[in-house]
Image (cartoon, rainbow, N blue to C red; front, side, top):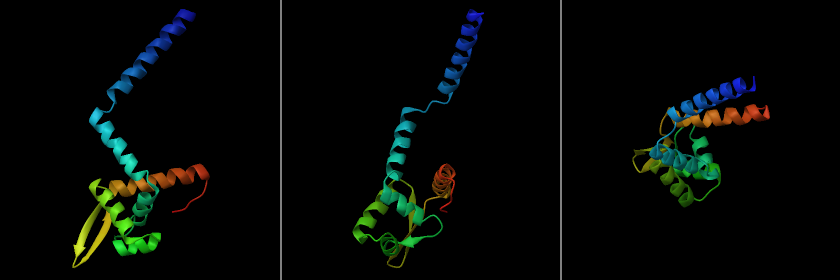
Length: 124
């Protein structure tokens, strides 16, 4: 009977490993995903992304909202833009920033939902 248990476990283990191998990420995808999470893992950049969730803002407005220097906000927005997380739109001399697409918005909202679910409350 123990041989049957071991054989059954080994087969299930083999199936699970095969399933995981079928969904394994390529080295390039893994590298890019790691970079993505490093970019959004910065508290300042996450605050900027969260502030852009429902509206577009100019650099001055983001700086005011976050209580930061204009140059520091500009630097972080440049990083976010280079990472394709925000986009810029020029109107005269003013540049407005918004989230690059709905995927970014959804990632932020899902993160908030996950945190609120763990805590049992809601911030957003």
